[in-house]
Image (tube, rainbow, N blue to C red):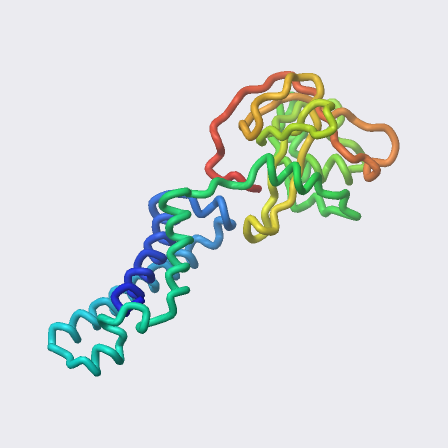
Length: 248
C-alpha cells in the first residue's frame, strides 16, 4: 500500500464516520446519540489527514523527486509503503457503504434472553407518577421503565392502568406466545441488554417487525422479583416503522 492509497483509506474511513452521523442516523445502530459530536470530529480529522497525505505525495511527484525520495515515502512501490494487512481497514468502510449493518434485533434478543431482576431500581430517574399525569388516558412508557416498575414497584401502581409500549417482535422459543422487546444500550451495541414482555393473547407477528401495543400489565401474585417474564394483555396494536433510535 503506497502513500496515496493510505491517504485514500483515511479519507474513506473519515467519510464513513461523517456519512453515518451528518447524512443519516445510521450511527445510532451502533452507539448512543451522545457520541455524535465525537464521531463527527474523528471523521473530519481522518479526512483532513488523508487529504494532506495525498497532497504531500502528489507534490513530491510533481517536483520530480528522485527514486530514493520516492522509495522513502513509499511512492510507486506498492506494498513497500506499508503492510498489506492495512487494506483490511477498508472493511468497515465497505460494511457501512455497501452492507449497512442493521441494528440488533430478534436474533440478539433470543440469544441473550431477558435481563435479570435488579436488586433495587431508583424509579425517580423516571417520571414520579406518570399515571397521575395522564389521568384516565393511556400512559406511554419505555420498555425499560415498564420492566423496572414491574420488578420493583411494590405498590404496583401500574395495576389496571392502560399502558402503551413500542418494540420489536421476538419469537418465544418455548412456544407460548411471543415477546415484544427493546434493547437498552448504555454505551454501544456490544453492551445492549434485553427488556421484554410476554404476549399470549395475540397471534405472533413477523419476527423483527415493530409494533405499538396498548393494554394492561398482568399483575403477578407473590414476589415481583421472582417473575421471569412480565406478561402483557393487548387491547390494541398497530405496526409502526422502525424508530429513528432503535435502542433505549
